[in-house]
Length: 514
Figure 1 (tube, rainbow, N blue to C red):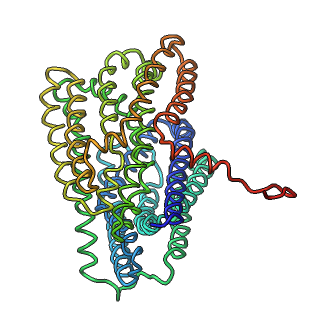
Figure 2 (figure 1 turned 120 degrees about the vertical axis):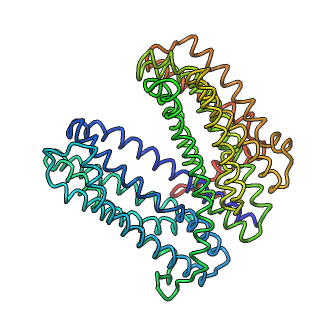
């Protein structure tokens, strides 16, 4: 790959990843602002009913069967080699599938969901339920078609374009809810969601048409081989993801059965805190999958190796900072946020789950990498082994070590999975595990160890009895960590490139160019 092509590739990754982070931050901020407003306006009962109803859309989304990631991968793959015929067959097959399952999900939400909800929830006093479920059903069809256009944009690596559309839709939805919720109740929420999702899917369809001009969803382009390819690829991703989800959903059940229901709450808070960091990991890495697919289709193994090793180190650096802050300040934060009992009962759980994050952060690009280069069998097999370990070991240890036993089983499953994944990645990349450790992990670990020592000393000096010293300590620590990362974790060549990047600037009006 030439130098201009390499620079363009890096710019594309930075643009897409940066826009993903912005979208994540905006989404979190809007949700933190809107949720209390919605609860206060609707009341606990109606809000709980809304959450229950929306859960049916979540279950209906299982019909997606991971076809969207298959679309992303194959649009990148066939687009890289300009195979327009395969692209049209693929998009026609995916579009017809999403339209079909959207209609099926809509019929279910109109005909079956109201009956189920009526049997498990008190609907007395709730008006216009027929229109409520009709709106949700229409929204399900729209959301399924959005899977297609999103897959096309992601496959063409236009994450920044899709993020602009989604952020605009999110802000529009928030404005409509703030304006009409007090007078319209639940119908105002679903109406706002419908209006927003129609705008988003229309803009996404227009953008997808721009990035893939001349391609259409045509019945004449439907081929059995395209369906087989979509379901073969997407099905394995779905199975791998489902085994992981089963292990996650089994943990509260194990705790409730082996201990009691109240213990589940003490376990759930550290889990939620760590999940916020895990969501950041997915946000930072999502743009890499179509790029790996594109490079693999062109047989550019050397470029894949360079991208994987370099960006694993960069993301590892970022995740280590989050892990250190969670380890030092996570416990005191839980005590202030929820209560002292949650801190006392959940401290060990938090430490073990942060350890899990630490293990996972060693290879943050693994899932994107394996999907992008079509190494799916290892994902399916290792996910099954890891999930079985978590469930079986957690059921045993919970009886002896309480909720800490379940957290330890999660850590054990992560160690097993990540070890096998890393060895398989090293074989594919043709690099030894020791060489990868020296090139990718050694320098960030040194910087994070010094950062940990500084943060512990800062916490001991400032304390953590309120939010202010925690915020100040975290910010001061991150400033120090940035300096450590710059001097210890980056290579001399990388620092030089950053210097040159900032040194370049356009001359001001009237300024002569040397």
